[in-house]
Length: 220
Image (cartoon, rainbow, N blue to C red; front, side, top):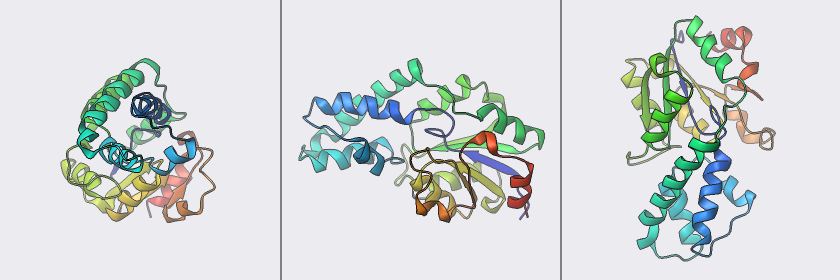
């Protein structure tokens, strides 16, 4: 089906925020005697803060009654750090210009809070270009469940089969494919060689590398 819309994830794709979420979690978790390695953080990349916090608190035998308290602390601190320190990922300006030139509808779909979506719209100066945005913050299920992508497509009045999604996480890729969308993955350098990216329609090392040949291949 002819492609008419593009949907972007946010964390790790448009802004270099994954390490900043981890930085916030590290600081808050320390108050509960929890210390995670980079490898441990990597296993929960792409989960929303609710599941991320609940998983690690359970692993370290912290009572579930603390989940909401810890989550709020992590989110509040992460948004503060992101506002101070986040930088754009390579190729962000290029990819938006690419699809603007082709008159595509544009959407954002993330497991992160709504506040981050609004911050990104202003930070990137793309508010006027975004036709719809969706957050899984309050959905029953987040990525890898496809609902956040289906909601974004519906808000754009677009068939999911007409959407190209850009993702950087495994859970996000699964969500996009479950929504029956075409998925381009841009993994971090230390994860790019993992075999599970084979489920994507295209794998790139940077948004900057996406070009007309890739677009034409995906738009058949």
